[in-house]
Length: 239
Image 1 (tube, rainbow, N blue to C red):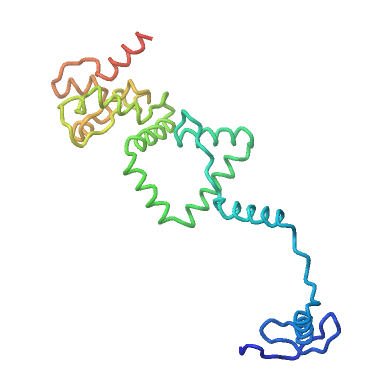
Image 2 (image 1 turned 90 degrees about the vertical axis):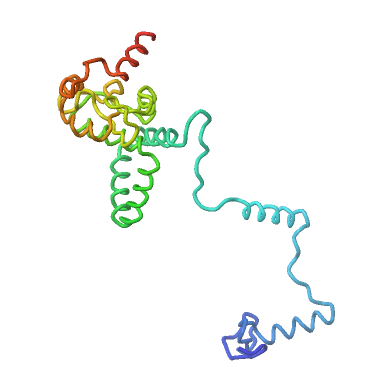
């Protein structure tokens, strides 16, 4: 569109004919009158605000630009990890709103349905980065299904592994270690950490649903109290 090109339009609010600028839509006669008044020095525009008001507006505009956009995470209180703080917030929300759990479950279900590939990749990446935490969560779900008592955390698993010096409880192997229940969950064992030990894949598979004492008798090892159980008993005795 050429600069200064004109077109016909509706009359302006001052009653001039409908000749307007095509680019801006402004009235041609009003613009000519304003130019003439500016040449004569008789044009009076809108009043300018005081300088203090302009500075306040500029400062408020800069503050809006500097403010981060989008939803910002809440600061984590001192003494809590990010995950512990998220869990605390969830408990507070569930206590304040009885429908929170149902709404959150429905939202998560819809989100996972719409983003199956992304959710699967994110979960797999988290499992690879947090194998002990993932293991403790799986054991907790399995224990809940079997109505087993107790629970344990990734910190407990690391502590038990340190007690065993990073080795299998039966053959001292250091690779392919698995968490095993000394008394299996299927035989009324618990999910408490003193009922856990680390075994290599070969012994964990062979042990099956036997107790620790039964399996030791099968492979010809002396029946002794497992190291993790002994340490936790000492800790309880010292309390």
